[in-house]
Amino acid sequence: MSRRRSGTWLGFDPWLLSAVLLLAGLGLAILYGASGGDRELVLNQAARFGLGLVLMVVLSRIPTPWLMSWSPWLYLLALVLLVAVAVMGVGRGAHRWLDLGVVRFQPSEIAKLGLPMMLAWVLHTRPLPPSVGTLAWLAVLIMAPVLLIAEQPDLGTATLVACSGLFVVFLAGLSWRWISGLGLLVATAVPVIWQLMHDYQRSRVHTFLDPGADPLGQGWNIIQSQIAVGSGGLTGKGYLHGTQSQLQFLPEHTTDFVFAVFAEEFGLIGVIVMLVLYAVIISRGLIIAARARHTYGRLLAGAISLTVFVYVLVNGAMVAGLLPVVGMPMPLISYGGTSAVTLLAGFGLIMSVNRYRRGPGT
Image 1 (cartoon, rainbow, N blue to C red):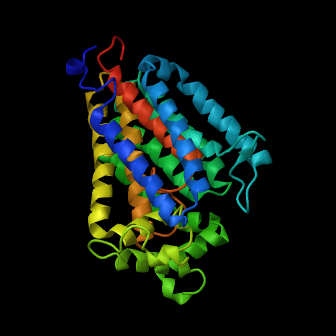
Image 2 (image 1 turned 90 degrees about the vertical axis):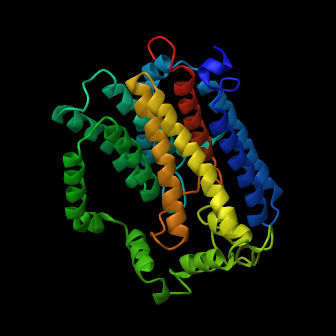
C-alpha cells in the first residue's frame, strides 16, 4: 500500500506518531528536572517508553481481524489477573500490583485495553444502536473489572476503565435518553457511593472542597500545586528553576503532580503547547476511528482516544484544584511503568485500525 493511498508514513499516521514521540521526549526532560537530576529514574522511564514503543510498532502491524479474535482472551486474562491481585496482590496500603519476581506490574492497566476491545468485539456483529439486552450484557462486562479494581482500592484507575467501556457504548449509538437516565441513576446513587468509599477517599473530597481547612496536612498537596501553577505566569520560571519542585514543597512531583512542575517552569505558553500535542493525539485518533470501515475498529480507536482525553482532563483539573485528587497520571509525562507501556500499546491499536482500514474484512 502506497503512502499516498494509505495516508501514512512508513505505515504510521505521521501526526499521531510525531505527537506521541514529542510528548514522550518532553516527559523525560520534565522528569529529569522534577526529580532533581535523578538519572536512574529517567533511564527507567526511558526503558519503559522503549518497551512501549516496541509494543506499539508490533501491534500496529497486526491486522485488525486478528486483534478482534484475541479480544475475549485479553479480557479474560485481565479478569484472572485482577482476581489474582485480590488474592495475593502487593503494595503499600492498596494492593494493586502483582510481583512475579522478575517483573512487577499492575493488571488493572491491562483492563484499560482489554475492556474496550471486548466490548467492541461483542458489538461488531450486532445491530446498532444496541438493544436493551445487549446493554445489560455490556454493563456486566464493564462492572466486573471496575469493581475488582475499585476493591484494591484504586478509584482513579477504576474510573478510567469504566470510561473506556462507556465510551465504546456511547460510540455504538447509545441514545441521549439512555445517557440522561444513566446520569440520573449515578446522581441518585451518590449517597450510596459515599458510604462505600474508603475514609481516605472521603477525606480527599473534603480537602477538595476546603483545602485551607488543613493547609499543613490533607490540603498541602493541592495548595502547593496551585501555587506552582499560578507562579509560572505566562512564560514560566525556566527549566530547572521551579522553586516548588526543586525545594521539595510540591509532593508527588514526578507522578500525579508533574504537570504542576511543567506549568511552573514553562508557564501558560508551555501548557498550551503541551495541550496542543494532546489535542493532536486525540483528534487523530478520532479521525482514524471515523474513517474505519469496520465497527470494531471504529469503536476501539474512538474509545481509546476519548480515554486519553479523560486522562488529560482529570489530571489537569486535579492539579489546578478543580477536581479531587484521584491519583490519575498525565499521559507520557508522569513517571510510571505499566501505565506508560499500556498507553503506547493503545496507540499501537489505533495505528492498526488506521493501517488496515482499507484491507478486506476491516
